[in-house]
Length: 386
Ligand code: SF4
Ligand code: SF4
Image (cartoon, rainbow, N blue to C red; front, side):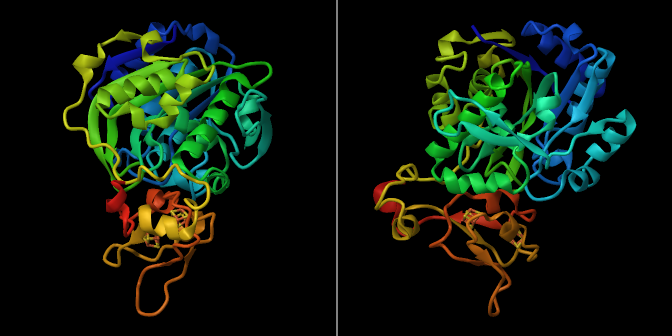
């Protein structure tokens, strides 16, 4: 039976964070002696350069607390993450992580150097190239931030591991798995590979920063911080994401990495099997948490004629940049794997979008630093109730 620790934590104060994380690990039966002499990859969510208060990235003090626990337990922490567009070095430099990395003297692994992880039990993606540093680790400490997400509805333990794939290679995966359903199945293949695919196997411990989470149009600058005052931990990322969804009060049926995760042979097949230790989900449940919007009931249909440009233009949300907010930084163009974005033309001071080429992955919306891109409803979306 998978255990999920759920504890109150109302601020990012280092002693409180360390006490809470230690208690969380104890609740799930993780012995800190395991960290002794271990190379411990610590993987936060560092999606992009951003201030801690925006709740886009795992809070830097939360990361510091985990790192200090590893060091005090006799292990060696190694920071490993691959941001969406910018290099890891630049992202660290432009966030509070610079201070933490400097003062804690943390080794940083190169996220661009990859090796193929093979997992024969995957549904479709049996070979995935991930950062080599994960192979060299004895233990992986995954530190997700709980946020809403335009495609996967929520992002937490399962989705965090997407960052094991280097830089813009990630967005290319959206071309190979274009619908929310297909993309969630890919994420579950990756989660399975990282949980069961290493030889020898290595523990992966998920500790979630849900103290200040993100609601609305997450997981980037368009989302809004929302205090959930919670720290969760588990050896099972699917079970942890289920509990996090419950305390946020979102419709877990829409979280495909959770509901489809239950259908896999990944250690949990229903909510009834999850043992929650610490606070109860009822007492922790948030009021008025704003779930991710957009999408369409038809967004999972990907066979002809439902994958044609005409269908998408009529029935799916499309990303639309706003002239008032856009600074023409072209980070959207850089991340767009389908080549749907080009430079502005004519008098309009926004990038030009080719909606016939756009696969509706919403990566551009996710990383736009100005939150200048919104979802515009397809012309006939209302007709079909999407
Ligand atoms: S839409 Fe956003 S990411 Fe794209 S150019 Fe404008 S500000 Fe930059
Ligand atoms: S334009 Fe935006 S939503 Fe469309 S494919 Fe490119 S990154 Fe994805």
